[in-house]
Length: 353
Image (cartoon, rainbow, N blue to C red):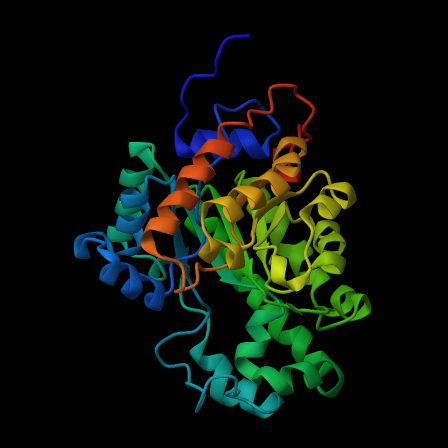
């Protein structure tokens, strides 16, 4: 069998999620590095001109994976007094204080200069770009505040649905404009809906308060051929099926410390892709520990659309030389996976219509 020619980062990612043969698995880091980690690496000898988000990826020789994030808020939206608190209490606050400051015009959220950067780097072939917005759990939480948000499903159910419906309408308008300007390789909804023991809400609440709005926006995203990932920390084992039911193509970061096991997800939802899951807590112990972790996840890489990556940001107790060993091993194990047997099912967005 002839060897697959080297692919661009974008070609490789799309083929991998389409269940097609690839030259190797993608070698990406989806999350920016902690500033504490970068500071430690500077002390370890990292060149200062390599310390930026994009520059670090080039320095390590990864497939570059750059995020563009936008929000429904504007400069006029009130700021919470401290992290975790809300900016509204009830319907009157939403209508009079908050809503008038939301929903900027789609033309204004990304500058023409940034669109030019996206196109130039994408055409260069070594860069993936993904687009991020807040999900229908995260978005109301930023307005209600963490504690009041969880009460809002019961205290203000109609307001919650109104807020999400208006947000979904804005997102549809946003996606149609943005994706007509630039076709991102994938997009993510920031959710963080789970903790170490599972989702913070029940399936009944998900079906009533989140699912209708995902079903409203995901088909629009799929019209442009863009895969949809859900970003939720914690144990998402139950939530995988929930998000599959609304059309999501994948999930990340699959935190190992929360008890996540990607092999179970591949059994449950073979059409979905999964990103992350490499246990960051083993990295400080050196090459043998990291190789053992790659051996653990290699069977899952071979049987499904699973892309290994650190399961959140690399901790600052990982020396620069150890991270270089991680990247060396990541490339070694990525080269072991080509999906040449053709037994991988495509993500929903890439199914033949």
